[in-house]
Image (cartoon, rainbow, N blue to C red; front, side, top):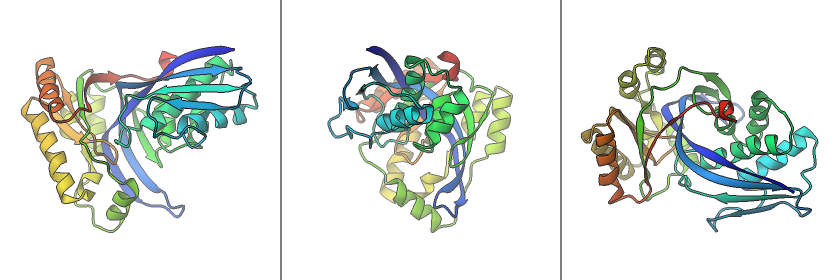
Length: 293
């Protein structure tokens, strides 16, 4: 038997734009993505001689191929034409579930990177991203990580200059958001405001953290139910009051994040939000994950 431990990293949407619905039912997206240091831990063991075993510290998560981590393992072995000889996956979740942070996709991506090394497959990052696209739209980005432009369903990636190093406060309110419902709402209304993606890309190219933070925007914020939108706005405003350069919602939410240059400001925002919201984190940005393998 052989074993390894890998980390799965949460993602943020520095910007998120929905360009329209496609004939295949998906939506064309244009998003600037960023990896941050809130992580899950996965222990992978091959050669157990037993059927695939999937377990987690959260009892409500699927413990079979319906879990994206297990699905990724099966897709990888199928694509590479290898037999894992019996696989055990132990997942310890820290990334909030259903939070707009791509936690499930991050777990799948970590399994792809981890098994690639554990089984000695030698697959390129590009090939891992291709396999990841068969598992979920966010998985290719989560394989790569860092700062990137994601287009198409999210699987068409372009590396961008790294976001200047900064502290990040993440806060998940105690409610969930239905992704299909938000897409339906967005499809049925006129989008009033779109992110200045071109300006954000220019700011990244110039290493202008303030310029990036001022251009962060997520069109899904306009599709939230009014009561939920008010709570999102209140969290964003609190972050700004404590010195965030900018704040936005990630993905389809409800997690809100703020970028901070000042540790004092980040720590004060973290402390203030943690009193009301247990799933609040103080972390920092992370670079390309394939370069760290």
